[in-house]
Amino acid sequence: MMHEKPGIVIAAPSSGSGKTTITISLIQALKNRGLKVKSFKCGPDYIDPMFHRSVLGIESGNLDLFFTDEARTKELYENKNDADISIIEGVMGLYDGLGGTSDEASTYHLARTLDLPVVLVVNARGMGRSVLAQIAGFLAFDTEKLIKGVILNCVSETYFDRLKKLITDNLDVAVLGYLPMDKSIKIDSRHLGLTMPEENKEVIDSIKNTALRLEQTVDIDKLLDISGLGSDTCIKSFLADYDMEAEVEAAGDNKPVIAVARDEAFCFYYRENLELLEKNGARLEYFSPIHDKKLPDNVSGLILGGGYPELYARELSENYEMLREIKNAIMTGVPSLAECGGFMYLHKELETKDGMSYTMAGVIDGRCYYTGRLVRFGYISLTDKDGIFLKDNHLLRGHEFHYFDSTNNGEGLICRKPIVETEFSAGIVSENSWWGFAHLYYPSNEEFVHRFLMACREFI
Image 1: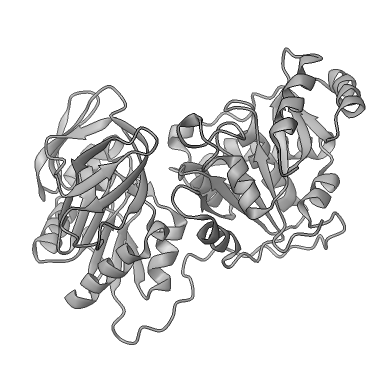
Image 2 (image 1 turned 180 degrees about the horizontal axis):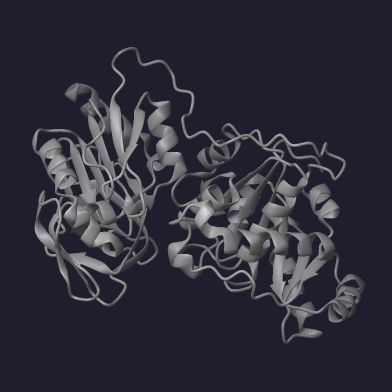
């Protein structure tokens, strides 16, 4: 089958099966062949795409069927997708969706929506004939017949040959290969993407070595055939440098300049968010709250994204000039968005895990502090109570993951958790600002972007 936008979904029976290792190594192996690769992460995780961009040097984004409906998700997959092949890394187990009990927003739901084949990564360590039962169970649930191949992880060459014969004799699925036990790729997932490629030489070398091993143990030609690309595709390089500056529709002279915090402390951004801002006429100027002393010139909007300000609290607090710049900009009416780490930065004080307190921007009268536990986690739907950004109770969707809390979380937003259907108030919202712990996914409601940019244009 030839797909209009060739791609493969890398899935697994559960987390910890090795799909991240396979995904990273496969991307590198395809790059080695001279193919232009684009990657996506199923679900809300922004760390894997950041790693793919900064270390593997490819374009990467998120596809999430909780954030966007099927039609919009397809658009996001196809939008400016001129890659030879797209690699989509699944989340959790193949059929695990909202709350772990629903198919909605699962990896399988995404594969079905995009009509892409699935390659199942199975950790076969400590398994024999039982691997048949596991794979057979996943095939039985595959109503659309999307599972086209299997890669066995953590097995020796000799044992793989035995398992391959067992599987092919009993099941209708291609066994594409295996990856032996491999501890050479050791990456602390909490810090993926926080360092530049040149600071990750050991990690890059490990990935390259594993990619070479994958070429020897996995039938990549067969995988390319399954993807719809075909193994006879031209192998010359089409790889272009990733350019975050998307082509935008002309906005005349009324193009707002949005200052976007991006450095070691503020690095969690959905690529789709930034592209949507540019598509709607914004010009993004990046700056560092750690290293820079002033904001970019002529800014009419400010975005403080998520990240790890607690790891750089001392450096942030010692940059008095930038703290003053941020506070003055907001106090003079510059429209602003602040998510999680950016929300923490706007407080008067940030208390870190070791109990040390550091002065922050002082825009929010409150203190952020480490709780020692996961305060909130998972998907969330939000709308502002006063209908400032979102009219008629329209929803904006996002995701939460934070161990810090605030003495002033605000009450400007109605926040709803799916599945459990709990509701609570949080967030600080005004005519030109939206601050809170939730990481927002702008394509889930473009009304939010239009309202923010309208405020920015009015400030010009």
